[in-house]
Picture: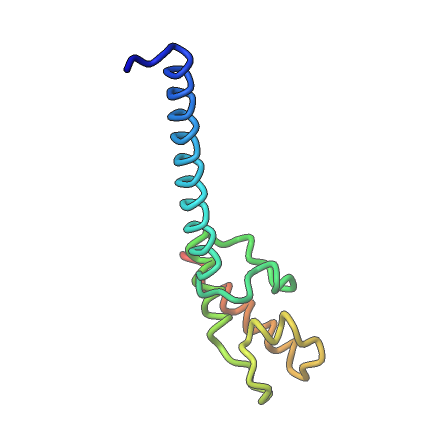
Length: 113
């Protein structure tokens, strides 16, 4: 059975459609992987959450190191919060100013000579 020109044209356009769908799905999957990886970076409270401290003088690796250190350190008032979490969310902490200074020290120490 011989295919007509109309059938051949339809087959080509359908093949092109499926190819485009595959590419869109692959790009979407890649974007999802990048997004999930960035969200699972181990830094719960980033520089946007800790606006009272200036991270702008740091290189990306230094900034990440400082943010990880600030997130891993603990507030010493007994609240049980992380240092970065306390500064970002608890404006009533009695040692908040001290915690801000601790994060500034972490940032200063993260700068490579």
